[in-house]
Length: 165
Image 1: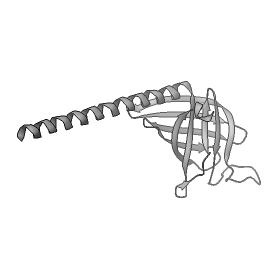
Image 2 (image 1 turned 90 degrees about the vertical axis):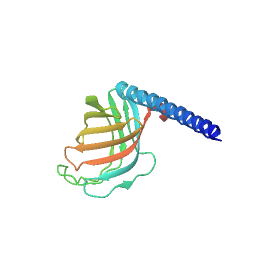
Image 3 (image 1 turned 60 degrees about the vertical axis):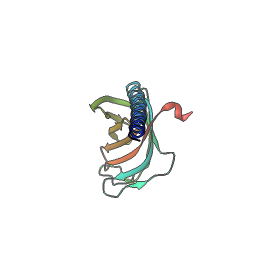
Image 4 (image 1 turned 90 degrees about the horizontal axis):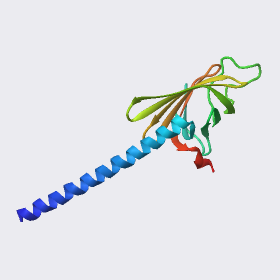
């Protein structure tokens, strides 16, 4: 009986070790794919929620995203907040829908489980500073600091631009 218990325990330990090793391999592959997307500037963040500066987090409808492709960024993001430096008759609630050239782009890896992308974009409406935290499981937070409006944050998941086709 003791031999059977020992054999069962050994098989269970072997199975758990094999599953754990498989998860580590999948995680490492995913992390390498994310690093490649960030370094090549070929990624899209599909947004699921928005957190305005002065309001609680709200879910957003499907289709809101930020696309980084080479030296350009295309934003299709909702916005809620106030404008401090907007033109007469303009609303601080205008969505962030634009395509512009990226002026600054930097990728750092402060910890092994995440990357931080910082970039600066200027268009006819405003100048935006993006702080994008990408975890190696794909979860992503985008903090946007416009020059003339309240800051806003988004949560979503990173994918390759091939998802768009």
